[in-house]
Amino acid sequence: MEKCKVKKVLFLLIICFLWMLGLFLPSCTPRETVLIYTSAEDYRVEHMRQCLNEQFPQYNIVIEYMPTGNHAAKLLAEGKSTACDITYDLEYTYLSRLESEGLLADLSSYDYSVFCEDVCKSNCYMPDYRNGGAIIINPAVLEKHGLDKPTCYDDLLDPKYRDLISMPNPNSSGTGYMFLLAMVNRRGEDEAFAYFDKLSENVLQFTSSGSGPVNALIQGEVAIGLGITGTAVNAINNGAELEIIFFEEGSPYALYGQSIIKGKETRPAVKEVFDYLYSTYGYLNCELFYPEAIYEGKSFSVPNYPENISYCDMSGDTAATKERLLAKWTH
Image (cartoon, rainbow, N blue to C red; front, side):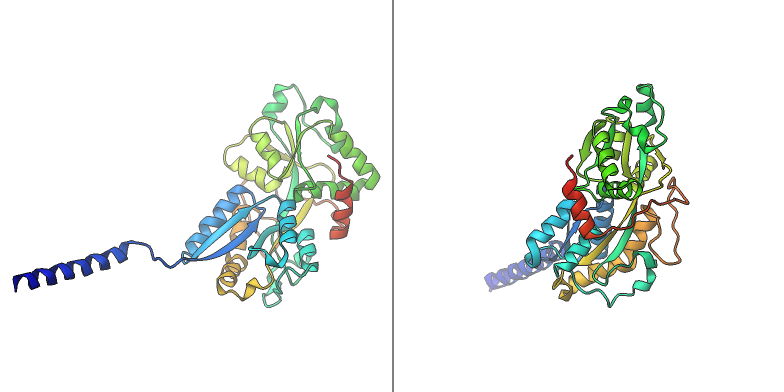
């Protein structure tokens, strides 16, 4: 009789132990994965990852970074078999190409009236920010070399700036391409390419991403960068001694957007994540990092971000034009 009681007590203890174990161990059921391809800068990727993980603890949110050109090329190569669910922060001309290949979902059910009219180009993708460019300088490096600040694009051709300039490569970076297109629109195609041929003699490195020049400036490797205004502002707000200037032509800019890969919009998890990017995270992105206008009737202010920016002529920004111009780029 005593043995039966002992066995019963042991059995109950085991049941209690297993129940308590279940409270503290994570569920064995795997979380559904949502895969996002992005070309956003690392600090924005980290912020987005944190926000999405907090908002959707039930999902495994995977964010895969790659430079703009690689991002688009990967999606085009993978086609409809891609594991990617959402493309985020891809330049509009690339999104247009993906749309023409039938790779993007129809997003016409979303309310596009929340956006400024000039940023609404398609029902298959929508903006996440307006990316403006600027001439960014490290005054300490200029002073070290006994050099003055440049005042125009032609100043950058002076041999005294040799190996002290950084620019993104247009073939891999949307930021690099917007500087190229702005120069083509300003000076004409032949003169623009002649300009960059000459500028290349002073460029230490054509970086693979738009954030590369700012990183080089922070490290003191160069004195002048053709880079992203928002990236420079973020660096300044984190203590970097940089300055942002605009030449007479104004700020080149590009529109970057987001979309769902066609067929993935039927997955509730993907739809929920994209709804959050559309309804909530886009405003956070403008509020914290990129205040340049994409929302109708909304204005944002970021410390040290230039105001009343004058923009370059960015007309003719089509997929066909981009493909043709990039085919001529040799650096």
